[in-house]
Amino acid sequence: MNTLTAKLIAAGTLFLFTLISGVIVSHSGGPLSVALVTVHKLIAVATVVLFGMAVNQLVKTGDAKVLVDLSVVAFAGVLFVSLVVTGALLTREMQLPEAILKVHQVAPLLALVASTASIYLLAGGKS
Ligand code: HEM
View (cartoon, rainbow, N blue to C red):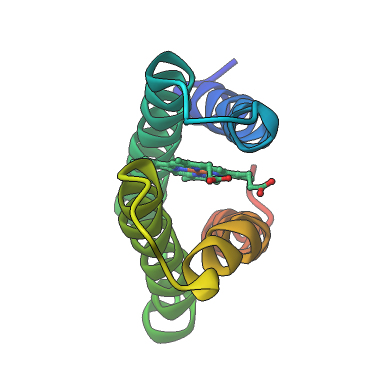
């Protein structure tokens, strides 16, 4: 198994664990558990780092059709940043507009689609 495949499998698996741990945090009731949120946060950050490393490897080795491909990557990046920002706000448990939680619930699904599309476009059927 080459290193790209290993990174992609690890990123995909961690993404799944991020979703599962997020739902567990959300449904644990009462004040947020610092331990659960920390686990969720660390897995989320590891997912983003691995995704970034895989994209970097693909851009370096492949012939990215720069504008189209990289705009999809940028879209995925914006979604991940929005998740980190809304996640950090939610962790503070202050009175927040409903929209913040909504963004943190919808953005994961969009990020999943955008990151899968990024890898597909960058790999260009080569992997
Ligand atoms: C790849 C990045 C991330 C993804 C895909 C993700 C995904 C999720 C999902 C699916 C939920 C459950 C939402 C629900 O069922 O209502 C959730 C909840 C949560 N996440 Fe994340 N998350 C990410 C990053 C983060 C980060 C970086 C933090 C903290 C800095 C964070 C903090 C939280 C908190 C506090 C909740 C509970 C919200 C609540 O119900 O009050 N998340 N996340």
